[in-house]
Image (tube, rainbow, N blue to C red):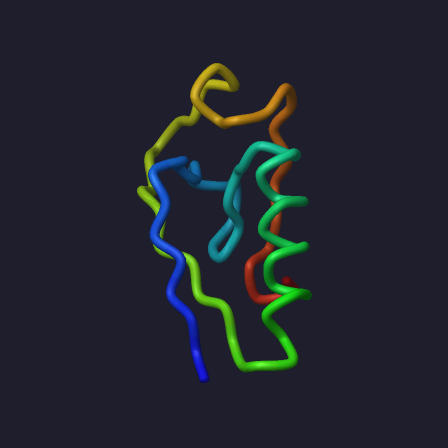
Length: 71
């Protein structure tokens, strides 16, 4: 079974293709949710994607760049 998580916290575009900038606390929350859901299927996340993400709207104190293909 697959689960679609729709959220309002945006991802920013990274410096290279398939890389995105996201708040570090939000990323850890998404990783925990994916681990919790993994016995039942796949967790997919739908979120806004913006060109530039200020830390104030990231849901975290710091921003990190991630490669979603590696997550």
